[in-house]
Length: 374
Image (tube, rainbow, N blue to C red; front, side):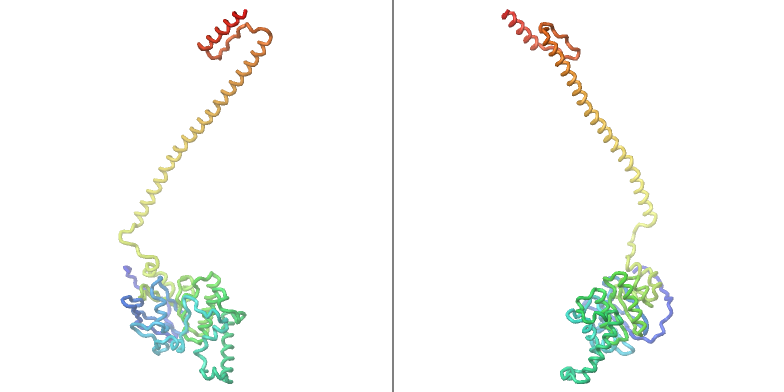
């Protein structure tokens, strides 16, 4: 980054006790450093957003927090206790999460999926499950009651016996949240909870997260929908290329030049400024103006050609009329010859073509034939 902007947080400092405290978290995969020295604190009753471009390391950071990855460096504390590097132990400690890609048990009912999330809060063991004594039935009834309460909370109580794979996409997201809440967490991690949702579903999810916060559960959420994240979160942290770029309230993050550059890119060296852009616009306008007369000039010969075509069409018509007039006069001459005036020579017409030599020879031969007959 080339912009040297000093960020001043304007939001009031949170007053709740820390629930999550990540210090210097670094995750390397061979020679690739996906997360580098990230510090993040989430306090009770707080909603914190984690944003950044694709490939910034957000989900990798989530995996480090929940025990799916063991950080190469750094430590993660939950309520002052360092978390063990096992995901089921992290869940038992009080951190639950959803995933970017929905991970439900598709062949189980909606109620059964929520009951799976209760396994960390039940005390019945293997022998109790095999013998199915009174304690087992009591614990099972309590788990079902709590699961139905959570389904009522997310609006899925009426579909408790439906297979989870038959739910619409938005309701599957809600079911994942209900299953996470079944473990009675103190911190809920949401990985892109509104991905693929329409505006109405996104608004319903926003209200659901506020309701979860009102239950006293802290929320850490990854999301690419900026409108959603800025309306929802008390604080927002930005990851870029595995490093935390800035952390603050929504207005501070939105106006930070480094964040804008991370999402939209930075101007390259020698990029055209306002003067160059104005010159380009002026040249384009001049080129467009010069093109218009050429277009009109090209259109004029086309009109002349049309006129010539019309004249050529009218000329054959006139010649046809003259031919018809000549034919009428010839018929009239033939009718006069029928009255006994065969020997009288016909008067030549003014428009008749001149006689050729062949015609004179034919006339002479005809006269000689009549004399011989006489």
